[in-house]
Length: 410
Ligand SMILES: [Fe+2]
Ligand SMILES: [Fe+2]
Image (cartoon, rainbow, N blue to C red; front, top):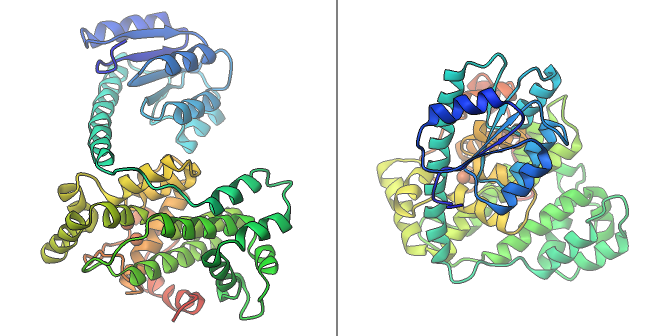
């Protein structure tokens, strides 16, 4: 199968729909393959490149949501369309809510509408392929992608089983790295985690913070190490890290306000806050001249930095950051939040995290805490304000004082 052509995989047993689709698509210059079961479909995706997968409710082998989630993980470039048929309401809600499919068509579907969605999906797939090849061209200009330091890899392996790990071992691993040790002690003694200057012992700091935050902080320190950069005009590294730390604190505080989210989501928001602008470090490390030019143009033309990056560097810091996060095999909640922190509605993972980091990132810039390199301060998107009940400027301004009093720096 030629991966330059348009190949569609249809999973289900709907002969009429398949015939009509084939007729409607005419000569699109690719293959239209039909399989009946989830396992056959996954095998096909492993062997060939498909731009579009159409999955119906009558799917043998596993629930549609689980199947679509597997496709998302194993073949992320394939656009996923779900035809609901007579699915249970909960199944459709699950597919839509989790973002397992990018398009959902409810029964009774109109064949014309189905064709229109398929054509739109193929257009989306082509645009994505173009974007991927642009990004690949940028990656090809980096001599070798940076690797994360051993301390993070060892810690990640040690914590692979969250139910059964050795606290002593975790402490031994972390204390090999002075930067991570001092960062953890600083956070353990910050108002954000409920302490003010009482924790001097690393093991106690780890217990207080919990292993999710510990792994996130070590990851953030490891990222600084892997992406250590030389100073660039208009991109002052200390101000940049203040921006990320303040974004982490505010993102955590925002998620803590939600009744339907537990402490795990608040910790994830904190971790994402620390990492969300990692793509800017990639630009600063590997493309310093072009990044300096993008910073200059964004400032002079009063344009959002990420828009200028797309023009000057060929991709945004969200795109290159998410690429590196995926290459480092970081969890999807990090990859997706890094990718969509400027367009949270488009996240296909937990949208709450993307909204939280979008609000935090934007307000931290408005409050002028640190500096992200972006001089054109944006507005918070309406959907994000609704999610966190921040409908007026006064409500947003009210976040500044609790944020500033929780920062581990002055
Ligand atoms: Fe950003
Ligand atoms: Fe940011």
